[in-house]
Structures are given as C-alpha cells and as structure tokens.
Length: 553
Ligand SMILES: Cc1cc2nc3c(=O)[nH]c(=O)nc-3n(C[C@H](O)[C@H](O)[C@H](O)COP(=O)(O)OP(=O)(O)OC[C@H]3O[C@@H](n4cnc5c(N)ncnc54)[C@H](O)[C@@H]3O)c2cc1C
Image 1 (cartoon, helix red, strand yellow):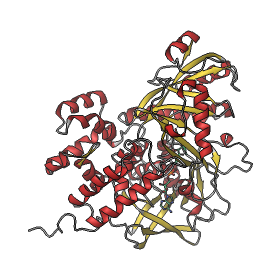
Image 2 (spheres, rainbow, N blue to C red):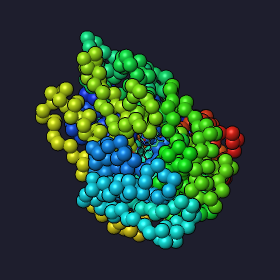
Image 3 (cartoon, rainbow, N blue to C red):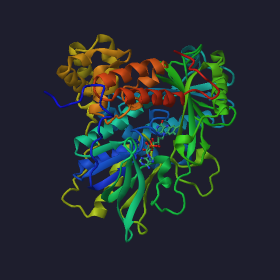
Image 4 (tube, rainbow, N blue to C red):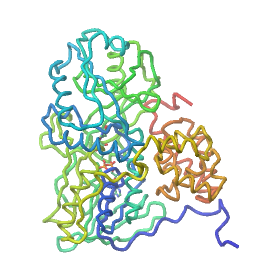
C-alpha cells in the first residue's frame, strides 16, 4: 500500500530542496537570469537559480513580444546592438522555431513624420545590410497603390509611401524563459521558484552567497556561492547587500493594450510614428487580436507596483484611431492592458526616455565585492549573447580552465525546438497525437517538441488526456507542476499553459484548474482554493484602469 496521502489532502507540494553550496547562484527568473543559468550549467558549473515569484513575472512577460534588431536604435547609431540583435534573432528562428516566427511590419511614410521617407528607407536598407545571410525576406518599398489596396484602413491623409521590413515575434515570451530554465535544469542546474533573495552575503570584499526565503513555506536559509549574478531586472538595486552605492537602474514603464480585431485592422503589424509626440507606436497582430504599445515613462520604486494610467491607454488608442480612422477604439474596446518596467541603465542626464540606450551592461561590483555582477538592461532578443558574455567574465574570475569549453548555445536548440525540421515534426505529431484533436496545434505552439513529455505523462496516467477546461488538459497541469517549476495556479495558467492570456473567465477556468490540481494530488483542497483566489486577484491586474469587469468573457 502506498504511503502517499490521498489526493486532495496534501499541503502544497514540497519544493525542491535548496542547495547548500553552488559555483554560481543566479537571482531572478526573467529571460536574462534563466539564460545565464543555462549557459553556466552548460559550461559545467554547479548552478542554482532563485526567483521570488515565478519565472517570467517581470519585464520578460510584459513587453512587445518582438525578437528584433531594433530598427529604431539605428537613429541613435547603436549599430553594434542592432547587429548583435539581428544575429540573435536569426539564431532563435533556428533554436526555438515553435516560439519565434517571422513577422512583417509595415512603416507608412507620412508627410507629418519627423523622420522623412528617405531616412526610413535608409534605415530599412541598413537593417538588411546588418542582417546579411538572414532567412527572412529583405525590405520592400511599397507604391501608394499597393499600400492603399493592401492596408486600406490606414489614413491616406499625408501618406506618401511606405515599406515593409521583417522582424520576428515570440507569441509566448513567458515560454522562452521557461525553456531556458528547462535547458538549465537539463544541464544540471536547479531552479527554485517562489524563493527570494533577502540579502547578498560577503566577507572581506568577496561574495559568499545569498540569504534566501521560500515564500511559500517562510523558511529561510543560506546558499553559499562563489559567484552571485544579480539578474533581478528593475529590482537589481533593491536587494540588501548589493551595495552599489549609486542606483544602477533608471527604469521606464511601458504599457500595451489588447483589443479585438477592429474595422480597418491591418493584416500585418504597423510601425507608426505617433502624431502627438513622434514616438514609435506598434499595432501588432497577436494571438488573434491586436496588441498596441508601448508607452515609455520614467518610474521609481518597486516595478511590481507599476500600474497603467488611463492617459497611457488614451494615448495608445488615440494614436491608433488617427492611423486607422475606422477603428473607433475607445476605453471600452480594451480587452486587457499590461505594463512592464524596462530595467534600463540610469542615465546621468535622463532627458527623453527614448534616448536611453537599450544595450546591456554586465556590472562588476569588484573591487567592493568580488564575484558579484548585476545585469542592467538586456533585451529579450539578446538574452543568449548576454549570457555568453556573462559567462566569459565568470569563468575568468573563477580561473576555471578545464570547463571553459566554447559556448554551444549559438546552435543548441532550446528544449521545445529540438528537431532539425520543425515543419516535419509538426506534421508528424499532428498525425499521431493522442490528445483531443482541437488541442494539438495549441500544444505544438506552446510546448514545441516537448509535446512528447505531455504524451509520456498521459501514457502513465491516461486520465491526464482529458480536457480540464477549454484550453487546458490534465497533462499540462501535471507537466507544469512536475517538470516546469510551477508552484501555484497562477504559474500554471499565466506562464505555462498561457490560458490566462487567452480567456477572461478567470473564476471559471481558475476554479476548474484548482479542482483538478487538488484531484491530481498537486495541492491540498484548501491550498487550491486559496491559490484560485490569488490567481483571480493577479489576473485582475490586467484590467484596464477604471474597469471592474473584463470586456470579454
Ligand atoms: C514595455 C516593454 C516592451 C519591451 N519590448 C521588447 C521587445 O519587443 N523585444 C525585446 O527584445 N525586448 C523588449 N523589452 C525589453 C525586455 O523585455 C527586458 O529588457 C527583459 O525582459 C529584461 O529581462 P530581465 O530578466 O533582466 O528582467 P525581468 O524579466 O524583470 O526579471 C527579473 C526577475 O527578478 C525577480 N526578482 C526581483 N527581485 C528578486 C529577489 N529579491 N529575489 C529573487 N528574484 C527577484 C523578479 O521577480 C523578476 O522575475 C521590452 C520591455 C518592456 C518593459
């Protein structure tokens, strides 16, 4: 007879035990922390990552979801950053083909633009030159006739031409973080979600570890480490013991709104110069709807407390209505909105937020504290190269020779991209999947080749094949808790299955998943009920300011 308690009577699943000592301790489970953990583990180092909430709760989720060179940075002559980003973009198309897809963007040339047509054209040409050898098409200049026939919704007032250039989109940026964490684990790292860094510990000018607390059990302990990487995003100045003196971060918040398809909605993304302030506004087809963003406003304080202001929503809607007069968007059109804080380097003379470099800095705290680095900035796009650069510093510091093999991450697929031919894998899996047919494409888009893990779980427990609620199978819940470091209903729904970003009936689907999680033995009934309430509260942060209920059900 099994000694396991009956399903539904267990407290929250025991967390993976924390290590006592590692070579490298990474603080922060955003894209940069998870990528550094992956790179360090692949170089043979003993690695642990701690994240105070869940993977991808910060800027790594609440962004524009573009893996891009950053055409806009060309006007600030950031050629090296654009070159690096464009090459990382190409690598991700190969290493994560299930998540990162080619994505055309149209730039309309208007007479009122601050940037004249010739400059925009030059920018797109440079973009192509800096990404020579890419797999996506080159830019295309459009005639007025073509523009009017293919983008009939955009205003013809002052329109003198336009062009299309290619970048890529990552529909589920959250999953990019999860996959980096999975890759780190596969290489030997341990990943600990809901564990906070309380204080960085040092002795005689050298880092010795971090005092941590498991936020679910309240238990505190020390993890000793030869190297600590502070990848806490816009929070890097806030961890006691960092001791940088001057703040390193000068964060800016960026809001996006999500709207249903509207009259005159463009068939591709549109990159538009706002009439009111000349900033870039992006109208981005995303997940069957349109994401419009982003604002760029200096903020202070805890980024987790940053909120969208009604004026930001009005600005984004007004600019979209100017571009597409038939859109008629109003606050009522907003399905949800989200805000992220860019962990940008603090500028001595801030000026315009748009002028602050989007490049990253790997800040060495030596000589004050040797063995401690803080990651400032860093785009979603450049996470891998940033990690490679960070490891070069760590390995030099540790004088590790036997383990300094070259980085393999330029070509090594992420766990869900582990195939030489994604289209073939996809077609093959569609033919043999044992899951209900309506779920198969969704599973492939989220888990890539790791659908085989779901199949394996379902083969062991056939009841996992069933749908728990539209958009969630039992196997996905099991996978989230058992394989992907989830410890709560919010983790499962907002950052693993992605249901929380596709359905607004949070109470209903949250309730169904909570009940199933208890039934499957991952949570006690009480814990499931409590976490369900927390999930609804967390999801309510997506409500646009002033709204009490979601516009869609
Ligand atoms: C509006 C907006 C749009 C953007 N658009 C794009 C884009 O389209 N393409 C692109 O490439 N980049 C984009 N970016 C930039 C990119 O998203 C960020 O630079 C990147 O995600 C930063 O990742 P990070 O891991 O450093 O930080 P984060 O993702 O913020 O992660 C930091 C993590 O540290 C954790 N943490 C904090 N304190 C502690 C502690 N004490 N203990 C343990 N953990 C802690 C947090 O919970 C968080 O999960 C955008 C950013 C924003 C805000």
